[in-house]
Length: 79
Image 1 (cartoon, rainbow, N blue to C red):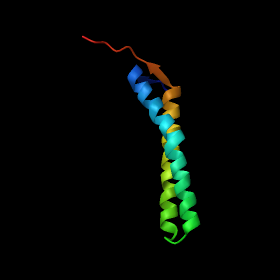
Image 2: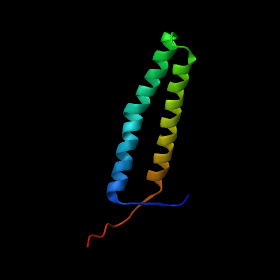
Image 3: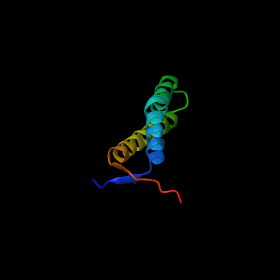
């Protein structure tokens, strides 16, 4: 894979987002799926929406992991 050039700040932001997705957002999405399956009063649409949210989150996690793993830090030049 090709390298991804990031500033130190850009890498920190990517790592922060990745940590948030892994530790908070993904758990919330899994909870939403479980809750919608338990209630089943709103039909299948809510469950499908929760599953789609989890799929998006997982996709973003994979994208950020790839970005971080291929990151090359560039020097920031201040003039």
